[in-house]
Image (spheres, rainbow, N blue to C red):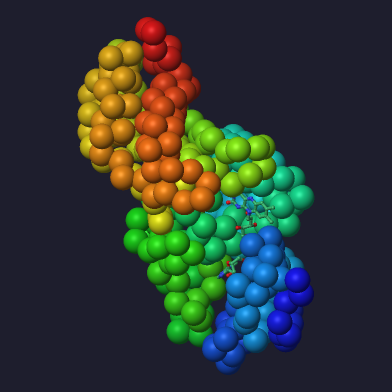
Length: 294
Ligand SMILES: Cc1cc2nc3c(=O)[nH]c(=O)nc-3n(C[C@H](O)[C@H](O)[C@H](O)COP(=O)(O)OP(=O)(O)OC[C@H]3O[C@@H](n4cnc5c(N)ncnc54)[C@H](O)[C@@H]3O)c2cc1C
């Protein structure tokens, strides 16, 4: 299918992009185009104007700012995953990006575009939630900062106002020694995940868990944290019995969505198993970590 007619505007600066967005109430930002263009072609989106920010060099960066890894809105997923700062300081971000679609998608798609688009089966919103990321925006009304915990409001829905542009995402850098894991189950390599999960975990020298964060995606209209499971695991040595209890608690407390791709029961079972897997794998990446005594 072909898209409905639209006006294409390539912004030459962030200020110009903000002005265009404010002047055309039915405009949409175009970044990598990997979600928006298919939606245009299927006529699921019919904006009158596209404001292209993809070639704004000032937004094409990865940097460390105040203990955060900051990714600008024009930085492509593949470039971010390969960036030395990401590989050294936040390898879980490279792992999450590696699960997105195919290399052609990652070569064009942006990290910020994935956060702004918020597909509930997407990897990066879940990682943003797990890390307590901050979403920085700009518009004619000024700058703003959104916390990830309040940003993802529903399927393809966020707290972003129509005249706000995501300029960067800031991922807090985990303390040294934090173990991480990122896993998902998809029908074929490159497909959107049926269920996915991530964990970040710190352990004391004796192997007890000091701090853990778990987030799942593909199970609800937004990514979800698992506070009860986090509480269960904190203070415990991550032995087989604790991993099994975490798996059971996930299965008991999670109420996943069903759709044409998977039933709620299937998602519940896979999610529970993934929670065990990401906990064990994250622990194995801590200095204390031998994975389990299983
Ligand atoms: C075959 C295929 C497989 C895919 N598989 C996956 C997958 O497994 N996991 C996954 O997460 N994604 C997947 N994607 C989507 C891909 O990752 C997109 O790149 C991403 O969702 C959106 O990023 P983008 O830069 O391409 O945004 P665009 O497509 O340009 O924009 C998407 C939406 O976000 C808005 N937007 C983008 N940037 C900004 C900004 N800076 N400020 C405000 N609004 C903005 C746009 O207005 C639009 O509404 C797949 C896509 C395809 C075509």
